[in-house]
Length: 341
Image (tube, rainbow, N blue to C red; front, side):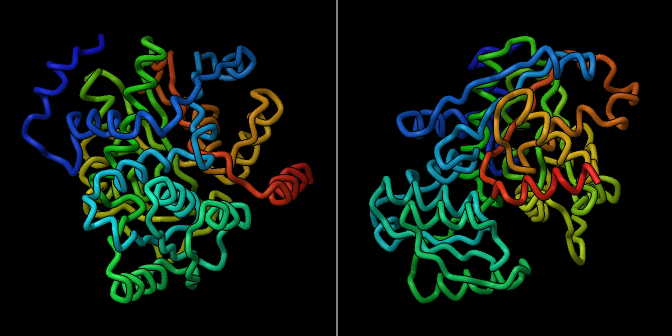
């Protein structure tokens, strides 16, 4: 059963993490006039593939084409006027960069965005479209962070981290508030995991409202640091990542790791080939174009490691967070063609 607001809020009256149900509710009120309440889609065909009821929370229809707008909007609207006046700075491979640019445009302040040179073209174009000022960096996270620090020092802008920020986590948590209102029966939510801002917000809100709910992370094999971190009991950072899911190449951090450690029930690791097949299903069956990061939840629920695991046999009503739809179609077609060879 869903808990009422007062019961849920009382559970997190002592703040254990960077966000709690109260900060997530505040974020919902703050961004309500700007963010879309995204639809939930279902498909009897996809249900038949796995013998479960699947509910796709389509953040690919969010402003900016991804869930990231929720957190970025909450963070920017949380700034006081003196903070906002000098603008904001971040580093991102794409979706957070675009989301922050759009949120900054709405508030009328500059956004300085450090973008790695290997970012997808469509995501870079979104940053430009929303008025973000692009500063290029090398692909490595160290280069991104060093460049962002330099821009921060030069401009005096406020740093808005892509995921390791309580305001970001709170904004992403509004997804759970909507989803559990839209589909009361959900007993499990599958969420992509990378830096952990999305799954942290989703898990905190969902577990506060419905303590019995299961939160499962979905992660690509070529960037499975979260799975390794869970197994080791501490943050593990990989020397390199290699996956088609460009939005899932970041590592857990100070504010997100404790939530993943405590509130995420398990992590399902899938191959890139399974992600590509899930993208195909989204396109052909759901009629929705989804980027690899957004398709990984479906890949996870269709994987043998999930379907054959007795621990999840009672997961009958599964919410899947379709995190974004920003992809270069050429890459999609190339991936599908390779999968057919």
